Length: 450
View 1: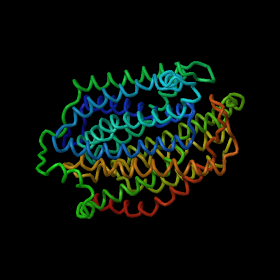
View 2: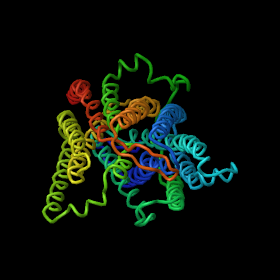
View 3: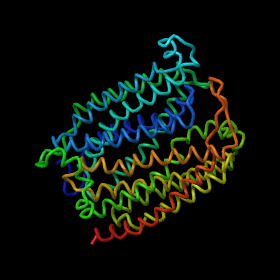
View 4: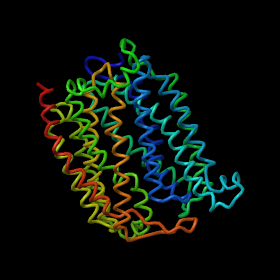
């Protein structure tokens, strides 16, 4: 195996964790955030985004369940990761030509009349892209990460994997700005260029993996048939014997549903509800110093808790992380369109969100049987992706339709509602339920430490 008794990981393993974790999260950041913006660009609305997210969630779950079980059955991770990333990148590239103008030429009609067809095609291709991404990242890469980890290093691994999405989102945002320039209205040409570049980089990452990834299941033998492997995680006996794992998954599910109420719409909210152009006029030396100090304290708290959680256990930090996350969401709601208040509240939310994601992710990996990692990735996806992405965006859509007070007109003359601040309050209301299973998870952590 690639891990040692001390839980120390080699340089090459850290390199692969960073490279595949980062590029995977860059691709997901584009799909989960900027694809939503792109859906608006081609004439879709919040309902279309909700449908796209729901289709993606179902595909992600089924793919991870099937491919994760298959990777366990044949004792291979590398081929799924490398080939999956290569094909994932190629599907991203295909979006460079999917737009109403191109579809209109094929249909022999005006661009406005091709909007519906384009929206449907984007949803279908997004499902195909999700299949490739879930095969390589959700099924194989996540199982590989669980394979190489131990209870003594998982908080560090989860910390890296929790920080990577933030860095990836910043990288995506920064590269968007670099490619699109200062233009407020982003055109199809810029989107196409971005999809070409991103897809090429993801494909290259998969090619590199052919030479850098080492198999993590070389000493594991699977005698069960494939169907038995596929349904393993649904068996009542398995649930009973792995109570700690399923409690962790319930916590993950509640947390993920809460975050999916607002997360898919955060960039749309920033772009359409908040006027970020006013930020410069609101900053002065005192405010900048306060903001820097605030960020420094938040980062310090994160680093301290991450470093201590592997030594003292994760149980003491579960409830404080949940409290910070929920209070942050409520503060974001009350910040409404006040940009500075929004930034301070959002940073607190991010800290709570990050800590919960680290602790719950580590818990799921800690309590996953080492010889069943691939088979149980599909079960993890039910709680972390399928249910959250079906429920969360639907809640956000209903709430925004009821409470949104601002609208905008898209490129095709359609007047659409923007996400309402109430989505953050709804996320907090759902998230507060997590305290019930956290009580039981805390007990399971304490029992595991004895």
